[in-house]
Image (cartoon, rainbow, N blue to C red; front, top):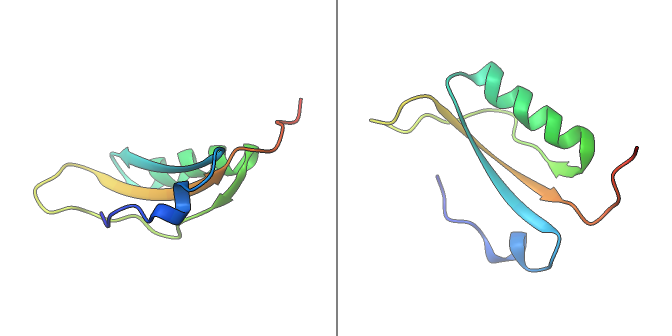
Length: 69
């Protein structure tokens, strides 16, 4: 994966989440769970790293807002 850009973690409450999963469906489902709770810049596809198992996905979260109950 590409290096993390400093602006994506420049303030408290901003996070970069890298998901590793066995398949696209699982990785995208985890991303959907995160996006249901927090403002999220989502990925529309996963990547495969040669020689590494499974798929990877990176999304960007803003966890500064309160979670709904």
